[in-house]
Length: 350
Image (tube, rainbow, N blue to C red; front, top):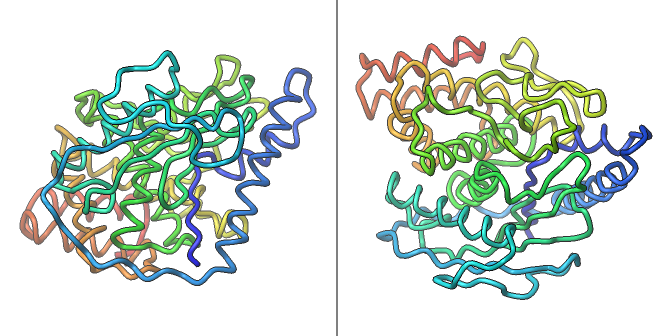
């Protein structure tokens, strides 16, 4: 059985928070230990499971979105009690309504920008569970649905607050149903980066922001006001998203000069994703306008055209994006030059 579990909060951040004994952070530390144990148990299960084959590429004309939001009511039993179905009126629960809206933004983005029929390109129903666990410090995609915790209230707010988080997690589903990138080492960091890329693009599309107007932050709004930080990650400037006495400093590298070799977090999938993240931002900055247009098209076509091996390295992916840019816009195009230049800037060999 294949186990799919991709969460938004990096284990290195949870580990740091779990070790805190500072006054006022006991609840946050307990919540982080709980979330970290959850992540590690799922990763252990994944390591023992056989990899699932990449599903065949399919395509149907995008149909209407079909969403159901469930309430776990503080339990860890999925999916929970249905509280809002497709077309239903808004509830009095902010988390349920934010999840409903975020799923809608994501479905609309893929349908309108890439003519994709939901996450699997075959009309997959979009389900989400809110109020998972007690003070649960994470949000995750479990292979078939979204799950959101409420946060601990000291460090993290509820995880439905950020459209980029919802877009990020559902993009793991897109990767699952297309390239099937392995969740380990550089392929795993690419898997995480693809989710950050499309999470950011969903957010920008929903807000109608150009590349220049966007913040390029992943998880903006998740931290409480007492945290010295803006978000979990910055695609524009990896390593600058937060610098806090309790959480420490954002450790993401912005080029291969800072690549982290580690056995933790499946070979550093969350930390090293900063390198391809910055490459995408640099392409969007160079081309200007809406990042979901030319830059997004290049990344989406590369992810879904069947050319990527599951164990793709940064270099393999970089060369694939350069080929895609040449195919879409020509080998002498500005787009082709921007993609090659971005990978050279972050020092990935092409």
